[in-house]
Length: 323
Image (cartoon, rainbow, N blue to C red; front, top):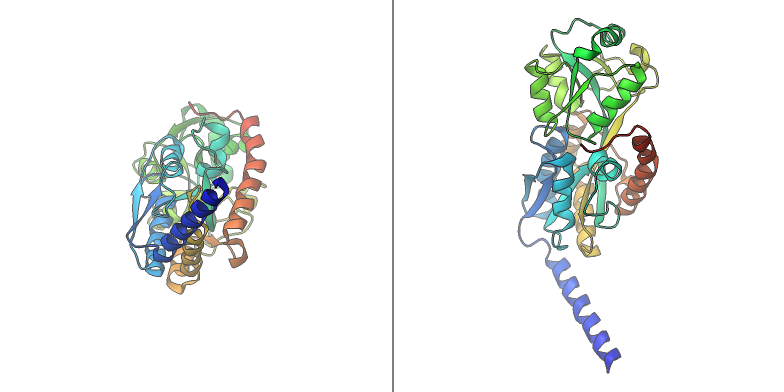
C-alpha cells in the first residue's frame, strides 16, 4: 500500500512538473542583480534580460538587490521558490570568491541550479584625470611615493575590483587605502568626481569615460589588447608583466528548479548570445563571450567549481575577509 502511494505521488509530482515546464513561462520573470546600478553586472544583466525575454515571450524584470558584496542578492535567489520565475546573474565575486570571504547562509554549489555562462572581461587600471602619472611605470613610481595618501575604490569586499586591487598592491609592492562602494557604478562616479585616486574599472564602464578624457587609463589587465580599446597597452607592455585579472558572468536559478525549466532558460541564453544584435552589444563592451560548448548548465557547474578550487586558497592566503 505504501509503495502504491509513493508511486502515485511520484507520478502526480512528475505530471505537475511536466505541466509547469510546458506552460513556462506564463508570466514575467525576475532577474536579481546583486550589485548596484551602472556596473558591468547590471549592464550585462539588462542586456541579457531583454534578449532572453524576447526568446521566452515574457518580460524579464531586472531588480538590483545590493549589499555585502552581492551576498544579499544571491541569498535572496537561493531561498526563492524553485519555479523558474526568480533567477540571478552573478559573477566571479558573487558566485566564487565570496565563499572564501563571507559566512554565507547558502552554499554556492549546492543551493543553485546553473543556467549558463555568458562572458568574461578584464579591467582597466584607471585613475582620476588629474593624477600626475601618464603611464603605468609613472603610476607605479607615484604609488610607491604617495601610497599613504592614495585611495582606491572598489565594488565591495570580495568583489573582483577589491581582490584585484589587493593583488595589484602585491604586484607593485606597496599599499594604499581601499574604499568600498555599493557597486562599480558608484565607485566610477567617485573616480570621476576625484573622491578617489584609483579604480580597477571594466571597459564596459570605463571606455566611454576614457574617450571623453574624464579618467586616465594606464593598461588593461589581460595578456592581449582588447578590440574596443586597441590603444590601451596590456600590463605586460606597460611595465607590470604577469598582472592579469579577468572575471566572468553567468546565470543561476534556485536549487530544485525543474530541469525542463532550466533547459528553456538555457536555450534562451544560448539564442540570446547567438543573436547578432545582442552579440554586438556585448562585444562592444569588451565582453569575451564563451563559446557554445561552454554555455551549458553542466559546463557552468564544472567551471564554477574549478574557479572556487583555484581562487579560495589565493584569497585565504591573502587574508581577504569581510569586515
